[in-house]
Length: 398
Image 1 (cartoon, rainbow, N blue to C red):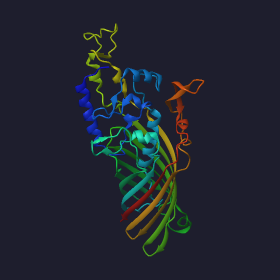
Image 2: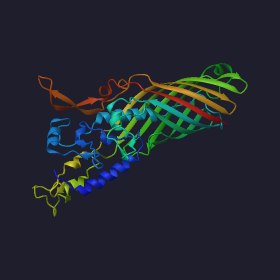
Image 3: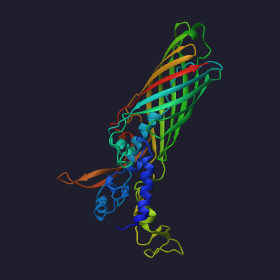
Image 4: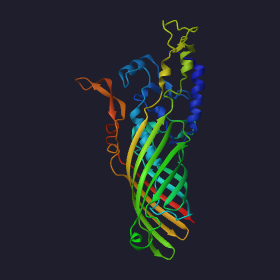
């Protein structure tokens, strides 16, 4: 099928330049398709992400995942990828149950290292990978994703008395273009009771936090956490306090893609030789009705179907927190370990469903086609491993 070479080449060159400037762990969800053959791997400098529209391939696509002559988005892979990014970018609730005290401030730097399932296809296909220094082009897939995501965050905590404390946070994730920001609030329920029996009891706090991201056009991601902590400060010397704590956090992950071009190496307008919409005054000679669809002069409208929006991700996680802080006068250092309490599949609630393609086999076990099925999120995440995060903090209190 013929297409305007100049437009295709220009758009492909622009796509390659944009991708080359991306970081290796940036999301690349345009690669998350059920059949990667629908967009060309290519060995040439302009073929990356080009629509593979040979007649033999289009016929094969009709028999393959999605049962169509264009790219079928892999909604399941998108949800799994968002779930792992969300775990890494979520509020860490890195604090004991006691606030900084009336009028107190706490400035700190935080480093959070989160384990990911880097061997899975949705990471290898769904992250940019390194740029080839000889060609200045990224590969079609990331053959060696990082084993963990790291997030550096600057935080300012301010207490307002009566056990109320607010936190502002801004962070960035190395090897990506992602910048995070958000805020936390918490209420220390026994704040101020420091004598008698209440002074013996451990501190208890409840709180909430929200984080959102910028820096990537691939998707919007927001995480919301509700948490509770129990801690007890242990004076060990003059001006030295050791505070262990344990906590629980319920986490919501909200991920939404924008309009994604699954074949960024092909311009749908040039591929169609676009001549406007099928409306009165600009009728499509091949149709009898005005349907507002593109009118193509000698081209094909198929590539317009390669622009998609992935199904929204609405996921839940349940996390256990173990932390320890040491403070000497104004300086404090701390560490915290976060892990899933239950498997990601078991943490899902509600009836959110995702469409997947399941192979159909003949009596000899050969794949003859695919059928589409809708599965709930707990089925979709079946077998997904639990994640963990290790957090380190250095700060000053005054």
